[in-house]
Image (cartoon, rainbow, N blue to C red; front, side):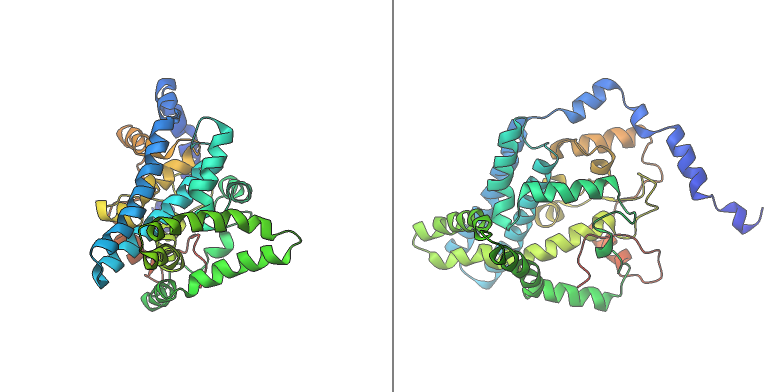
Length: 326
């Protein structure tokens, strides 16, 4: 057998994968268990996310020095990503069982504080799920650069941490709304939620601490978004293979704290069954693993360090990423 024939044709592998489709290997009780909504678990997610935000602000208030400021900015930036994950869960209607409160809490405690909104995000994001990695994927245009050089990634990280990326992404949102007739009304929830966050340190007589939230939103949050997005879709594919068109990254505790809140690192499982609530994704991962269904799947065990190593190795197969090609 020559080298060409020794390499399995992707279409043949996909045919075999469809023959023993992963979902058919899960029992109905197992599926019901991973799909079950638990409003208490989502409430706990909100409590943890916001608890860490205000604990970080308090840390700087109690021990004001450069180290605590840096730590607070990275933790807050990670929890701002947590807010985006809350919005993401609400977009899939897997945050709370009551659909009205699902969207309300998804907006007020998730989307609005990070200058986003559930419904417009839902429209675009569901297209991403329907067409992951294909020409119809709305995120596809953002994924072309990877893999890139280390120098290129370093420049992107520098722009993230100096606020350039944040400004480039936030300014058009604000300007676009102000240019529309009555568009300023769409900015009101953003202003209200951000003022409410600022009101907490101000109420304790420490108004300077209120700057931590917007500074993180412009800087460390952008880096958290970038790393998360690279991990999810960079160098993935083929698009037709549901076990290869997105990635799960197994992370350490500090990566979960700073870059992978609310089990967002289990992205392969989320794409396989997108209505599984975030707190049940580890259980779905364990089920698939124990049944041998993740053999050949895109699962990276070395954490984000390994993902970034691959993302900065030019010459490997290019994939997808939801990070702007800044």
